[in-house]
Image (cartoon, rainbow, N blue to C red):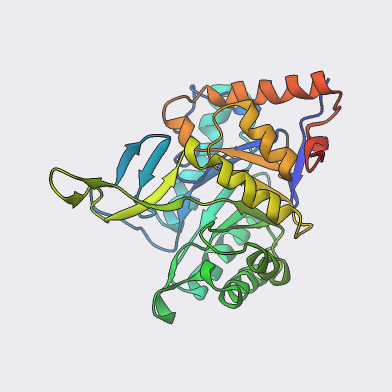
Length: 317
């Protein structure tokens, strides 16, 4: 029997798989389609202080090898999330699967350091006041513009990033995962900024900046003009970033980007990931969760690994 448990910065996961934020709704939308027993956690859509409408339509476009989206972090806000979404997730998954819902990694974002910190505080207070609730960790999305600092993205400056992570760290005892953007020359300064700020884990990678043009109309396809590329096409780039980060830090890594089959997840683990998220594939094949999980277990059995965690960083040569 292969041990599938992993520890992602203090978040105990019964399986090495989770979902990527923005691709799985708030956790309950896939009830009846996914075997939640093969998910170690579920990552919710981004949450900020208030309700947010996102970008105007059209805001997604299929491309060879993936999807370009500019959803714009549409969300319900923290009050609705804690009052309605979280309890409904716990109840609906238990009702459908007959088992306790996997812990939830809550993706958070904001337009200022204060907003990030406030959302983190609210989540921490809720988890403390509701023992046994699914709220298990925070994923800090730093690919957002700092409104108070003139719109410069939090994740593009190590010093700004460190200040943000430090502020969030002060407001929560929940495991803190920082989701970094891939479009930087060298990931290492950003990894160190997260380490020094008190992060418990890293999430790599976010989508890659992209654009699609309708050549007949000579106009951008997306109303936002540009968006983020996800899907199979970004996988090799994501593996490289995970590999570089693993060699630069002792923080565990949640890897994501183009996971469609077990091979993709195993690549991430060998490169240094502790856990792996499935994202764009879930739009067309929710059954990929079970296939990837089963494939990882089979790989461990064939190669003599007693635990999935033993795969982490076991790249040879």
